[in-house]
Image (cartoon, rainbow, N blue to C red; front, side, top):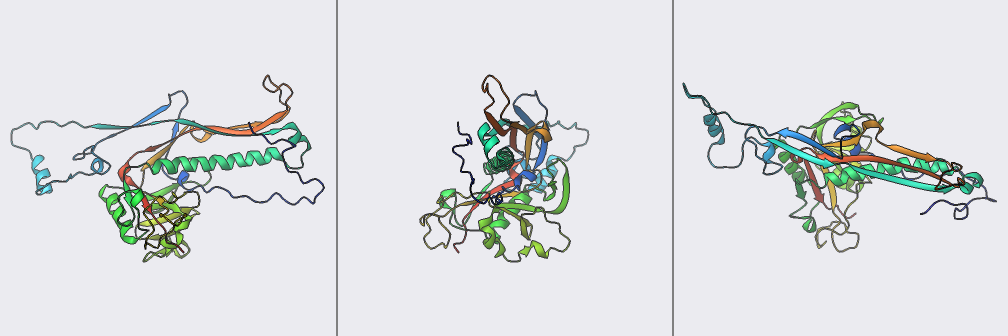
Amino acid sequence: MSVNSYLNTPWRIGKFKGNILKRAIPSEVLQREGRQVQMPKNNSNTYVARRFMPYGATATDANTINRFFQNGTGDRTLSMIAANTASEGVTTTPDSITPQDTTVVIQQFNCLYGFTDQTYDLGEDDIAKECASIVGERVTLINEQIVYGALNACTNVYYGGTGTSRATVNGGVTLNFLRKIAQNLAANHGMMVNTTLNASGDFGTSAVSAGYVVYAHTDLEPDIRDLPNFIPVEKYASRKPISDYEIGACERFRFVLSPDLPSVQDAGAAIAATGLYSTSGTNIDVYRMVVLAKEAFSQIAVRGESSTDPTMLMPGQKDKSDPQGQRGYAGAKWYKAVMLENQGWMASANVGRKAL
């Protein structure tokens, strides 16, 4: 166990003590998306949601569950009309509707920092306050990664250039690449996002101008700004930004960037003459953009808004594990799950970025 002790903390005694400096704060972008579900306590660790398949849809994949017309030969419009034309005096054979269940398991997450009574009593820094602040920042960062990891596990995946897998990605962000994704989302009846979770952290929402939202790493900003007809956020007329991290829009897309949506380094094709960036200089770094339509996923928290259970124990509190009250702790634990409600209403887009 590692704790902040008086002896292992580099104090500034005998020196001019300046301010506690600012540190990097995690970005919160994906946590403000999706449907927010408040799951009561004592209802097991499993959350099951159900949809009934629309007429004409099949459960084959993320596309077929959303489409009334499946691939096939002949005039599918006439075929559907014929299948639903009544015959005089004949009772129609009834159809049945088919449920499709989606299940996720709620997981518990936690973080904890420790410090000694001597650090608390003798040190010049408010170590308890600093630990508590970093706990909040760490919870934000972990939650962002939970959502990002879940969304990148969706089955509706696109690869830049001529790639057919992450290992063969050899292209970056282009307008045609984005249009393919928009075409797919529209064909799947994916509605454009028009609300976002309030920045205050409550479970309310605010209205925004509609669009498919692209979440990406800040490294991709130059490539996105180079897209034809890109409109920077500062030139919006009446459109309200969906996030403080939104940089602009292009056609149906709105772009929200964060430095906390990391790339997979050296995971793509060989650099060759692609002009794309590589950490090692050998294989392309792959950036995973998340593209979302409305109600594509949900975030499930046990007890909803009060799902995070903080810990703040000051030194001096005595019990059997610490009979002299020599240790203090700051931490948190919480329950969370991310459900991909409709994988045809989202996409994971794997691309490289231009080497500057």
